[in-house]
Amino acid sequence: MALRFEASCPNGLCPGWSVILKGETPAAANKFEINFLCEHDDRIAFHFNPRFTESDIICNSYMANHWGQEERCSNFPFGVEEPFQIEIYSDNDHFHVYIDETKVMQYKHRVEELKTITKVQVVNDVNISSIEITKKPYF
Ligand code: GAL
Image 1 (cartoon, protein in one colour):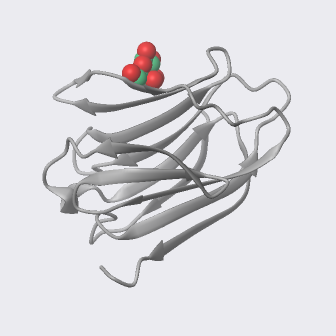
Image 2 (cartoon, helix red, strand yellow; image 1 turned 60 degrees about the horizontal axis):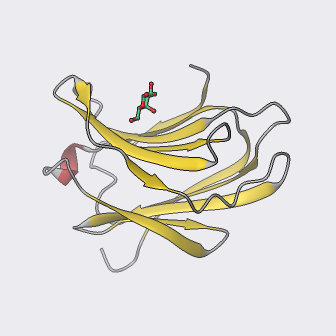
Image 3 (cartoon, helix red, strand yellow; image 1 turned 90 degrees about the vertical axis):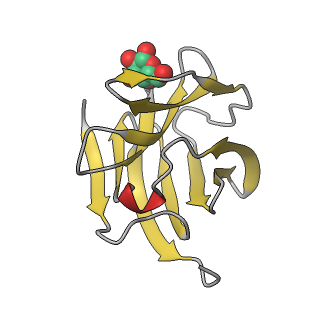
């Protein structure tokens, strides 16, 4: 696993924080991940995983030492070596995902105690040009 970025927010990222990643994938891209983690245990509240080999975005959570049921999004707007923007933010019910400002999916929260989701990381085949983490004004 190649860690590209990691930030923690002790008071929690959900609900209300928006993470905007701008970047592009390198020529030999296989997959990358954006993970929202509970840093005090090993849960992954939201694993967002574009896979170039499958042209699918795989979303899942890792809880109680195993992966749950995958939610796949076959809307796959990523091109190799093409710039993109991904925004992920959560309200009380879902993570909402926008790619290039178009909504591609939402993912219902599986971790119930949202305040325990305190870390975001970006992993593997992506060249990051910027990451912006901002709080939505209405939360
Ligand atoms: C597994 C993979 C994990 C994660 C998971 C999601 O096959 O090894 O990295 O992507 O699928 O369901």
